[in-house]
Image (cartoon, rainbow, N blue to C red; front, side):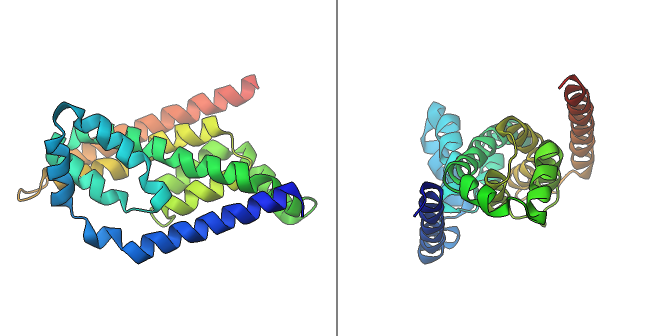
Length: 216
């Protein structure tokens, strides 16, 4: 058995174990927003750090990060909470990416070589930033699927992390705003404002990326 095939089997086995763990313990039903909120508050000044570290591991155990994001809004408000959430989410997304890249990329690349999938992989690799950004911004693509599948593709980690950082902002702000507005009406003008700002950030990132590719 080849080394790359062995690593790929380890990756599949680990992924199955993670999914089994997630469904067996049913964490999203056992842990509530209120419980997370109380836990964060009890940590005092260490709350933000512990929160971001905890968030970083949600992608590994497939824990619904929306609960953490909502609790963050309750504790710190929608703006500061969004900052902590985006940082934690970006770090969180890097773990499954690196796991699948190290354990599965070589095997997948060898299997795709000379096929139509190989051409698709090269197309994605050239447009990795845009591909990840679109998948982050469009909710139909599950967060964990994007994390692991991106690692199997030839996407640069720099492009992956930058696209994740930007693409995570809208969803993070939405959940934090929900948390901050619990028991109060949601101000729609703030949603419009933040999404306008995000659109400007995305446009700026795309312009930067276009210029960067020309320099390459």
